[in-house]
Image (tube, rainbow, N blue to C red; front, side):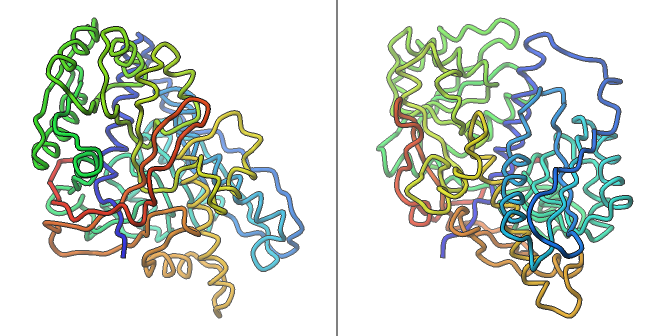
Amino acid sequence: MPRRRPGRAAEAAAAVLLLLLGGTACGSRLPESDFEHGGTRTPAPSTGTGTGTPIRVGIITSATSPVGGDTFTGPRDGAEAYFDRVNARGGIAGRRVEVRMCDDGGSGVGDNECVHQLIDEDKVVALVATTALDYAGASRVSHARVPDIGGQPIGAAYDTWPHLYGIYGSLAPRAGTPGWGGKLYGGTEVYRYFKQRKGARTAAVVSYNQAASAAYARLVEQGLRAEGYKVVPEQVDFALPNFRAAAADLKQQGADLVFDALDTHGNAQLCAAMDQVGASVVAKVTNVQNWTSTVPEDYKNSPRCRNALWATGSSRDFDDVSQPAVREFRDATKGLKTHSQWQLEGWAAAMWFTDAAKACTETKTGVTRACVDGFMNRSEHYTADGLLVPVSFERLAAPPTTRRTCLSVARWQDGKGWIPQGDMNSTCFEVPQLPYSP
């Protein structure tokens, strides 16, 4: 049976840190007071024919944050689209899903205010597709026993607290401390994939001389070395990066792969530099947060590097419309200007809640927090109609030393978009699990 990728939390958290780097690199820092406020709370418009008492859910998103607009809104938009479709089809057992949204402003203070508003005031049954820069209210959600379904693991909350169910599952005890003794564990399946399937042997890792960037680069380098790669570290100055020199060096050293610990702007500059010096690689590997339809705009000055972009994740390629479940997602979101993997995962999170709520309508208690939480706690190999690598929640007393993990892989091609590379449920490897600090 395919298994989840336990290391995805590290990747998501690192991606956010790197986006924050981008904000500071551009000199756009705002005073802390600008972020110490509650988010706006706008209920989604109600549609559909459901006539029973509405089922109320909450969505917390750092829609406005130091990182910038639209960075975190993908899961929210995907979830909202799914609930709109549920309501248009009559709701859940005749009950409309009423969505209450809250923008936490990207701050811990704002996040706690959103949690209070949605749980204590709005009395939501569950939170869905949480995407918070600083999930400061996670412990409060857990103590209130409110199920948080399909959230993005930006930080360690989903490997720390019970009643929180991240979109990629968890193996950790979740008893109030992160992972096992404060350590989380991630696999090397991405590096194994490119080694076995593409014959890669030398990998460059490009980072800034900045703490968050350098720390993530070391994590990537650790995994690559565990898989037997020759690793070529390339560090550039945070304030005045010389990407051309890094590109020239990775070319000279024969890098097959390029991984990075850079922000989006830095990635575009690196790719442009690689094209300028003629560096040709098997793959320029990016993460799930950058798996979007905006590649032509983001990498407009680097056609060669752009067409060497590969993305890895734990959900089915949002461009793979040969899959019925993906076609349904794309049809429901055709009005959006752009599409992304995070939108698809938000859609899957909303489906997960809906499946839980449908199951609860058949019980004596009906759709309650406790019933939905019980369904989630028993979740085993959940796939959201095939959109997710099978997800489970297992409370292992000790971290695994190895794990069979599966991954979704896609590569970009101009004119065709993201092209899936095999089926994610059969692209699986038995790999070591390496510790890291959240």
